[in-house]
Length: 529
Image (tube, rainbow, N blue to C red; front, side):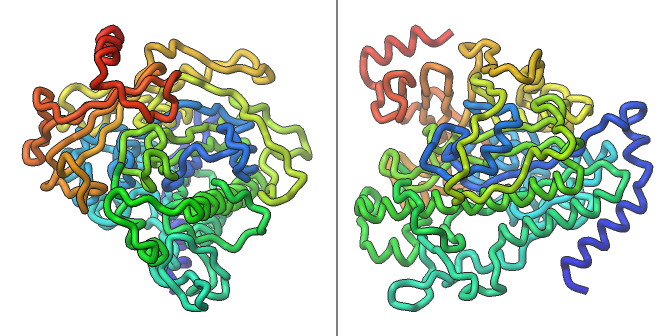
């Protein structure tokens, strides 16, 4: 039996065994309970129309934003895949999960911490994973944290194994393992791409859940716009626009051919444009998949009973600070999209015959830029995802974690964002503030040395010598790089290696470090409580 069919058979067995579990677990509120669709994107910066980028073609995600509460200032806790995903899926910060690289499983390294899907599963939901939700490998126990988190075996698209192989046809007519990789579907193995397969699988699972009385939690993880920038060839009218040493992209054949010096050699300007164009094309490809998924959700009459949460594990630099990757504490790599659609709360339920999520072709010239719906401007963190989803679904919000919390299985280090969903008028154009000067977001990033070297981007735990702890407020970003003991997981804040201080209003791109400036030091002291 093919793996796809085995997965659906598993789901049928699970639904048969827990038909009454959801109602029993939810008590009298079962009829008002909501499903959850969590969409997680890889390496997506704020390059979306709903975040003000008018060059990007992202009408389906913008349409979702128009019916959602959109957070303008959401930040990841570490700008690399596995640590970020484990952090927000457990609701704990990297210093608690003790995962800064890809090489340990938090349940063994730190504590037996519950995850978002595990909590929903324990409360009667059928939990399902499609694509890249947890980072695959050791960091999720080579099982995507099964069986703890998932009711059925997680699905990974079969074409995923070709992501880093030679599938990009170059000007010489040969296939290469390039960074920039528009593909003819006939050229690639299996004639499809991973995100296309994930969308198809997610829709199949939704079709199964449509006929079930069980509540579901479906997480869908899309690979793009993660490198390589593989996407179906797009119309020629796509806009051409769009320090870590970014060693991973240097390994691509087309980048190697540029013969750049390491670590500071700059990419030629014309090739920079091609990278931006390809990143933006990958975002538009992602948008088509989100559009098909949301359209199917509505066609199956599930949109009125399903929360949709959309976010990214971290951002990505497109030349800012001379960098072409993530792996830093700058806004461009930690600032992420975050939005929640809650039926009847963030948007009125549609009238009969009308749709909230009709599919929109990103390259349709008549498509109009949609404005976001409700917006919150306060700074928030991805560790808030756990308590917020639990509260929106009507589950008890897990308690705040004590310090330390390694012995506590269920708690959360992030604040619940439920207070932002207290609307008085859904028709009103409202930008929500609680108290922006009280909101703070934290991130961190490890380094093996004070100067760039071959493993500066992704140091293994044993090689970490310095940890950069960063605080982002409405006014400034302050980062201090301090000594770090990887054996004891301890930072030494009296051993300061370097610092950064950027003021948001006067230096939004964070290009001018004021840390060593006497005026900057005085200003920092005045900002410190």
